[in-house]
Amino acid sequence: MPPSEADQAIDELLERYLVLVDQYTTLRAALTRTQQRMFHALARANFTADRGVRHYGQDQYDERMQASRRVAISTAASSSSSPPTFAIVQELTAEEEEEDAEGQGKEDDSVADRKEKEKKKKKKKKSSIAVRGNPIRWFGVLVPPALREAQSQSVAAVEDVIPRLVSVQAEMAHVEIEVRRARKKRAKASAAEVKKQDTTNTALTVSASS
Image 1: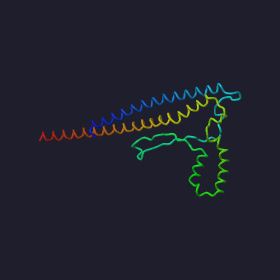
Image 2: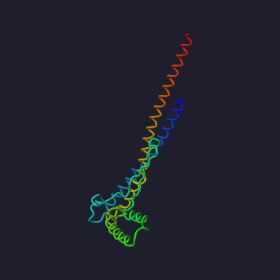
Image 3: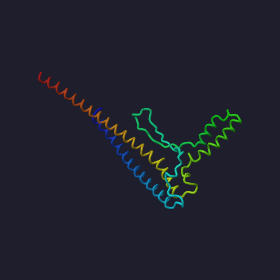
Image 4: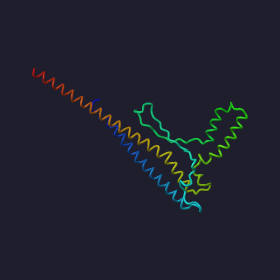
């Protein structure tokens, strides 16, 4: 690759990197603001808590808790061609999973089978309602609006800001690798050009002396 083309490729990569740095800085600031609003709302909720409630925290967590959201990582067919992207997917509740499974095999079930499944479903629903559902119910039915605000800010951070931030960070690391590769190619091309020029000069010198 001629040095001019190599320089242009590196410049384009560095330009892309600067754009990513700007996006990263913006997202970091957005995450900080979201966390500040979340902790402020949580402090207000604790300040206005009813009697008998020490504070809203992990002491009220249900030990049977299960993740309601998971990370989904998408990669291209060739891992070296593009960086992975991150997204948050919401888990199905136990009732939704069972309904989905029932929908697929409903035609093959007899009446007795369906009744038996319905009984199991009701029992399972009672035991899982506090395990996988809205976690704010762990703190009671009537919770202060400030606690709901803290939850909404947390959800916004987890579902929106953090996946975008991590995706940008992964792309920044990918561009850094591409810049190093482009610089190595440029160095090799420059060395080959110098060697070729030296060989040509040597040949001209030998021809002149002859």
